[in-house]
Length: 196
Image: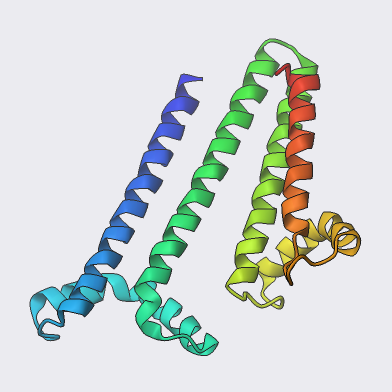
């Protein structure tokens, strides 16, 4: 299990460093935009060269949505933090699931093995629901293959909830109810099969 702990620490550290570096670069871009330095200077050129691969797609999406593209560094910071959190949650769920499965197999305990496997699958389902909500916020087209995958995976739970729960203030709260249901299932699995 020491290897899993080290791999988790390494991936966790790498994702955290990537988040911090990208957020720092976006903040530098914001400061450079406000300071309005010489656009042909070395500093401006370097900051633009480093940040344009992230800012470009966000700027185009903001323009298509009718939003001022000057907010693209802020949107990039938000997207980086959300995607980083999502990556850290996946790494944590996978590591915990693998650790539990390996420990269960080594101790020849079938109940905890099934419990950790189900718990890992439910954690992955929670992340799929969360990702679908994020994609719907940023208007990812349903014709996109990843969005079709998310819809086909989450719709069996969300569709009945959407029919049963009315809109509240114009908002669809079925994903929140679905997340609560899956978390309750996780707790039941943990209590019955894993033992706490």
